[in-house]
Image (cartoon, rainbow, N blue to C red; front, side, top):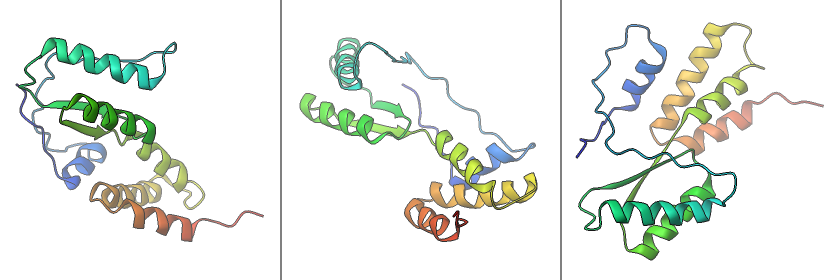
Amino acid sequence: MVERFIRTPEEIIEELFEEKASRKKRPKPVEKRVWASLEHSFKVMVSEMFEEAKQKGPKQQCEWVALVDGDRKQIIYLLQEAKKQGISITIVCDFIHVLEYLWEASQPFFGGVDESELWVKERLLRILQGKSSSTAAGMRRTQPKIN
């Protein structure tokens, strides 16, 4: 079993942006499986993932964890299948896409990288602290008007 790798939002920000960040030693994943398909729908893939995982651990003694990119449909399908199978699952959302969107959103406001970086760090920290709705609302209020 792999121990959880828990970090605070501040530690994540430090790790992403500081060159000399104090990095905690990460545990290595065990029996990690990456899924992708261009032929099958995500719903079909989720069903297949659950079937494979049940075969590997029929007694479900380990915590089930799924990493997704935050797509609502992915999360809905995972939760539906978990409920159907009677399995408790932890869903982890990858925030790297959010980070990319923040960098893109900073461009109209700032000419330099340093100003953009500070703006991105502040908003990413708020998002990681669970304040995504108010952060998004603040960004909408301050966006430049394009005619």
